[in-house]
Image 1 (cartoon, rainbow, N blue to C red):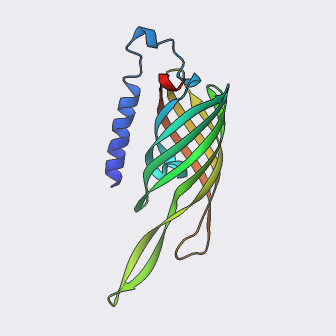
Image 2: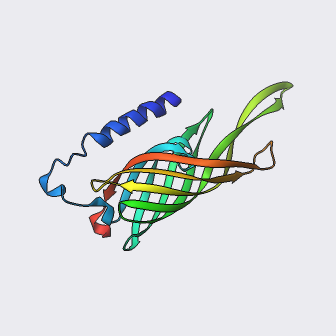
Length: 180
């Protein structure tokens, strides 16, 4: 499974970097940060459910105030899972944000006895994460982000799991002219 995510990430990165040199002359002067759109992102952290790929819908609320909803699917250790959440962002190119997600925050190992045999089981742990972060969007749509925060979840074998959260990612924002 990790090799597929790695291969997908490499393909995504190549697709992201090479065609973005604006083949059409009239597209060069447009600033993709100033309108509504969707972003495709890849990265590591709770926002990406481990190492994962995701999408983010961005809506400009008022001047430099933006709202986004995100969904991602990723792989963490020996389990895979999802993350769903939202961000409130402030800024044009340099953006500070507050983020909340619910998703895969880790996994537990435990022993289960079935049919008189003891087996090691790995169980996903889902929980809530809150973080503060920074996002930069270049005018052609290329973006990067990082954030720090805390995650809280309840496991099957432990009562509560509290861990620090670190997210880092890159992506590309596409605009929707009809949403402007």
